[in-house]
Image (cartoon, rainbow, N blue to C red; front, side, top):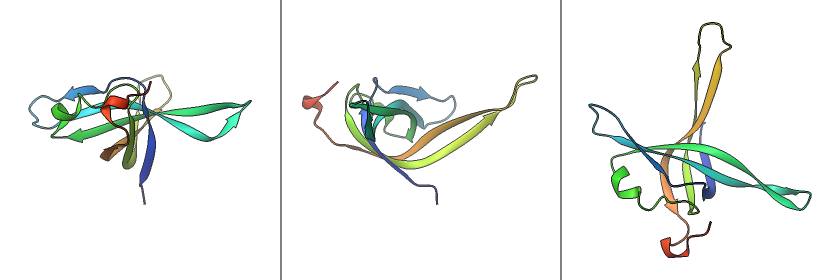
Length: 110
């Protein structure tokens, strides 16, 4: 089963991706997810790329702003690219199925 649930803050405002000849659009953003442990007394975080394909991207873009605390559920996607003379590169993303806001827009924390 490929199922992911993340809670974190957006590192910057979400980016709107539009595709030619397709009615659907997508949102792309990076989520800072705090680790469960501290190293040398400091919290560490993982920065996880997320893509959310949705018909409501134009409505959500104003709410997915830097510092917002959200949860994302979805799945891990892996794609590979082979270029002549170079080793194969792998790109890992989270493809979101749903997004939930865990703070109010007014209490934006950065």
